[in-house]
Length: 89
Image (cartoon, rainbow, N blue to C red; front, side):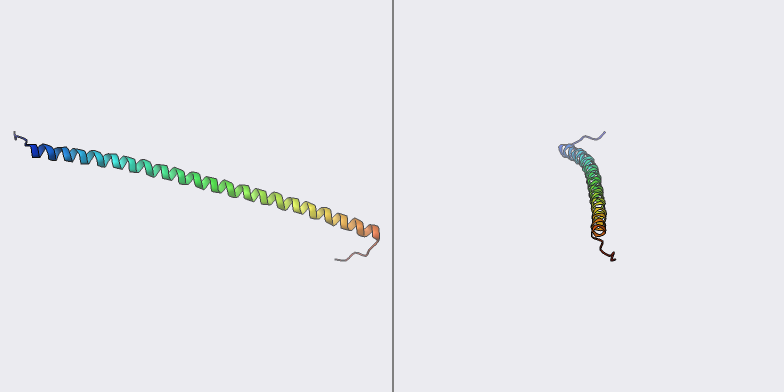
């Protein structure tokens, strides 16, 4: 059996320390990558919901405008019929 010198023990300790730090660094890198992936998915979901809400708001606005224009058309037709004006297109 070989006798280990102080230099051998220091080298072995350095190898063990480098291996441990590499493994821990890999674990931290993977954890951060998963956090970024989750954050990106969450941001995308927020953007998608925001666009859906904007689309719903626009649909409601257009529906309200359509209703108001229909009401105005009826009122104008009623005024014309009351004044007996000829119908123009």
